[in-house]
Length: 217
Image (cartoon, rainbow, N blue to C red; front, side, top):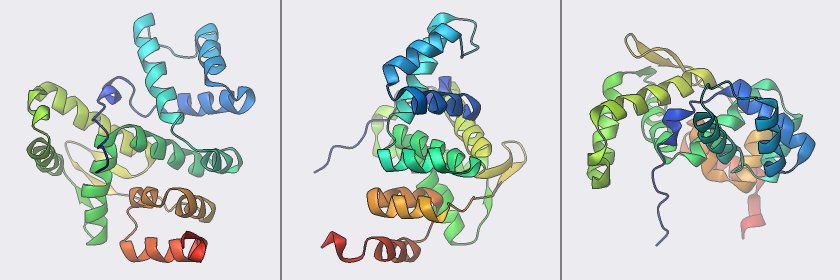
């Protein structure tokens, strides 16, 4: 049985930070070495946090997310539109943070499939309780930290264009459609990534057949 990825709640210190991630990606395109990228970030003081320790932790999380991207995904990023880039950064974030991935797939996707475009604070509470039931270790997370995790996830999804609205008023699903090239890249290299765009199973199957076909057999 495959080992389940542990939960990583370092997201509370980094949010999505799209502009910074795009700067990091530009540096990576030029240097092709994450060690050199990190050195450049420190030397040029790219991160604006007032504490060196905070900047160091934030840089570790942001680069950790981007390092999950595969060469084909980087090709789409470098050649793609701003929308492609934004979606790929969220893809990397969801891949790095299990809790983000599961919230998108188990809550947003399920709502989208049944044409329910409202996302409420209560939806996260129900989701969190289900995670605690599955993983008792989460019971040790204090209520304040749980709220921070919720707020960061919602903030990420708003910045990425997946949601519109606020915690107080509720959110509306505003899911962006991935480009054909991104769909093809995921279908061939990372089919489960299509779940993050809330596509129904039948569409994922069709894309897989279209772009992979008999290559898998």
